[in-house]
Length: 195
View 1 (cartoon, helix red, strand yellow):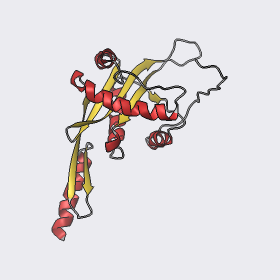
View 2 (cartoon, helix red, strand yellow):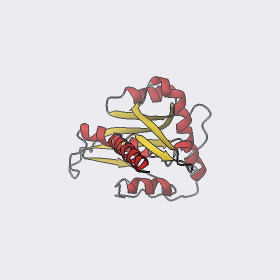
View 3 (cartoon, helix red, strand yellow):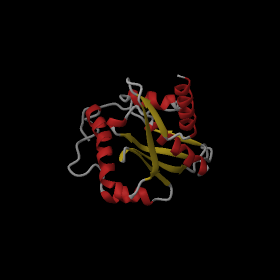
View 4 (spheres, helix red, strand yellow):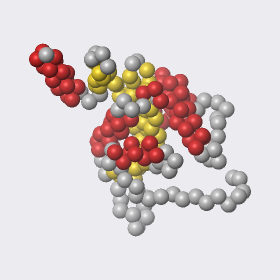
């Protein structure tokens, strides 16, 4: 029993020192160690990224069919993804787990508009975040957001901003748990005419 406690304490110490390592305990008491890798997106990730983006798009289509529609081709054009990967002011990170792409995040470094009332500032804007439904609830989204925060701090950003739709309570709760707060609201009124 003493050896088991010592082993668990050592395992805990190792995983705390390595934020991308997770431990899971099965009902049989078996310890599983999962290693997550976060790295910049690469051209070779295109197909897997489209599959992940499709999942995010489907969530939006199902909840806001008056705004989002099914695409006839890939979730995003290859040139669009390659442009994000190549851009100097964009961070595009992916998370790998079990040798599979499990999530992604895209952030853009922006400067406030040159309008006299606005305080000049640099900020990061989260353009998109997605975690494969098979990997949700395992800390991947949190790890990606932490990685973006480190990038933003390194780029001199004073804050990170994002937009989340009202229907997406799970995402709103996720961001609030990471310390994000609502600062403004975008409102819409349907007036009966499409487009």
